[in-house]
Length: 567
Image (cartoon, rainbow, N blue to C red; front, side, top):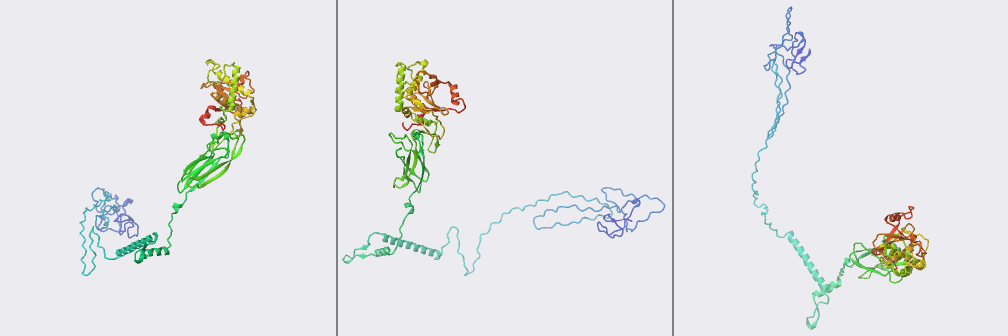
């Protein structure tokens, strides 16, 4: 028959002496009829077995007591197992000694009566500990030294602001004696040196009979001078010379007729370490230039000098190329010391050589061709006189000069014909002087060396290529104070002339039409182009896509400072 623990109500197996749940002693319980377990009725003594029912009559199973909350259950009613006590957070300790929280075991339930499980108490946050009130510390009592025993050591009293009394003797006195001894020794040595280095023999001439008596100081000076080997004093920084460094580069080729377009022939850099140095820089190409001299003060900073000596005055024979020397010298202005002296080789081309290139000694352009214009040369003046004679003859004396932009032969309605007739007269004069055209190409290719005769040389030779006849015509137009341009189609050279001052209308002149009698074939010699025709011609003069024209304005020679060697 099943058993139940009277303490917690847990079932207990047969033969077990203690409850497996709470450990209480096992007591016999009842098993009610119908199989439903009921808590045994409270009896003074719990029987080991329940009483058997009366035979014969049906007995309904006893009804459990009705639950009434919150009345306490009757003795003998079913008792629920006690609930574990709810966890209670220990209260924060008060300032002071540490107290461990006391453990409180759960109260044992009343025997037989049903007790509802206790409710968990509401959580209460622990109260923050109160900080103790601040109390300022009492002022410290002044320190009092304990009384000293008679005869014991007493430290000297120290008063703030007053220095402690110095002890007599000790290290301070010793240090003073040492310093004083050193000063006396230095003073004695100074006196000895002064006496030793002073000139003359320190002697007294007093005494009997005019004897010369050596003074003690004189004797000591003589001894010092005879025995001591005094070192000489020198200042190396004062005797050190400045260190001057000089470096330079020179051009290797000079085109005489392009000399005016060059920036320099010698590029020099120099420095002076240890102080500033005034130097004289001298550069010369003997037989070609005058001496170039420039004074400059060198410092530790790099100084650059671009030297270009002036040409020699007078006629210089440069009809052919030759070798020459560039002389460079750098010397000290004050001492004459030479820091650099050297001669380097240079190639002087002929006056007729023409080349376009750029380097550190100058930047060359198409306008360098203007150096070959010679409007005031003797050959051009001769050409002008021949042209005037031709015009006077063919106009019956109506045009007996080259008037430029002036109305002479024709009026305002045909003003441009005054210019065209002058150009025709110049071309006819070239033909009368025996000038003929030599078939030959001219190119403005960079780096290409070409031989181009000056106008006078061409007239004297009686022939010339396209660029040479164009230069003769352009120089003659300039001599008449008219505006000309040199047109350079690929491989060829021509001239354009403005038909009146600042008119903006230009006529194209083919200067290779030689010989020329001035009476026929004018359309092949001179042609008028409007703006659209000029644009098309300058872009593709030959109509085959071979390239555009170069145009050189002859009026730019003076602004650019381009003058030929012969000018």
